[in-house]
Image 1 (cartoon, helix red, strand yellow):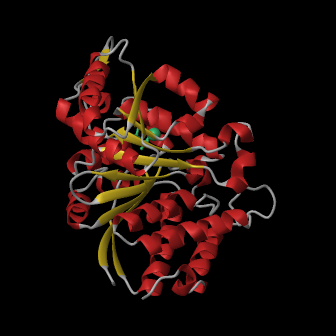
Image 2 (spheres, rainbow, N blue to C red):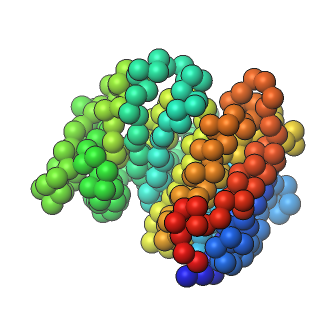
Length: 362
Ligand code: IPM
Ligand code: MN
């Protein structure tokens, strides 16, 4: 059945526009092949929004996101703000405010290893055997959003969690575990932090409602080590905002490149899809960035739209490019393709395979 979906596009900063343009090409190819209509409303966020309006998240952007079916984001951040601790307006504020305003409390980051890229990982191939996990990172609470104070002599960032904030993300993580290998790991620091002890209470109390799911608990320091020593033990991870930020960057290198990791952020309204990587300022405008994380974020978007064959089509086409070494320079030394060329290869693959090849009836 053909679908109409309105997508707000936030290209953002650095390589954001380049990778998002490839993702939009993929969506156009999917729309044409399966007779869907996707509309795109481009809005400002981050440093580029500050440059043009003085505000990292203009009201127009919020309005568009609120009325959209999905939001596609590239990346935000600009080095000119990173080394200025006294800058009062920062690109990151735009992203944090967007997450908070849209109530996007769960950030979902799957980590998959592609066989043909195993050799790029800093870990031995045998350690990477059967690695397949998804991280549920709490996104609108904790130390990121607690009361902040700073003067010349002292500073503090409050880490605060309400029971309901833990329950709603834990529920999603438990449900996800039942669809996968029935393993849930809570990562915390319950030997030191009261907020972590509340996380444990809540997860322990919810656990009997999901009898098939085996729950285990790891302190963040141990989990950081386990992620390298034995990453295949993880199935679904659930954790707070700050620990999730850190552990997901660590997990991203397992597969050989941060440029491969997609994400979606869920709340009660439209979801937001973005690559886990940042704005990679050094590569801006060079057409060398890896668009795969953003294209795999499109796969997640299509799946959430209920367009399963379409999502599989995107994944199959990405896997095909990886297997054929049709890759950007972060993944291959010789004969690397440009960002737009990888986008073309994936788009062509989608368009040239008829839907019959996947057993789909239009
Ligand atoms: C991420 C990023 C953001 C975060 C930054 C850019 C604010 O690192 O999405 O992981 O810390 O959440
Ligand atoms: Mn991060």
